[in-house]
Length: 81
Image (cartoon, rainbow, N blue to C red):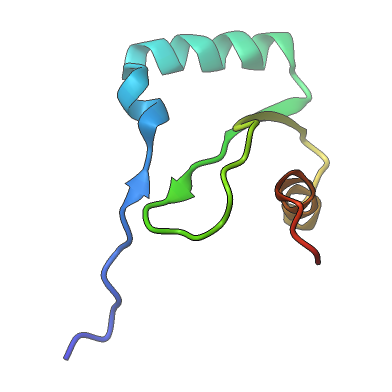
């Protein structure tokens, strides 16, 4: 019996769509242009029953905490707190 759960597979079509080099160039461009923001890309676990989110790419202010990010995600998904 294993003490650890098997890792869930993530549907990461963003990584499949863009090469590592393309992602690095884009992230460097964004970090240079928006110094006070953190680029975040949301992906959904395979088999998850949450609805699709229209917007997957966010520029989060660096002073935000995880609770504020969760609030943004829940608002976009129309999930009550």
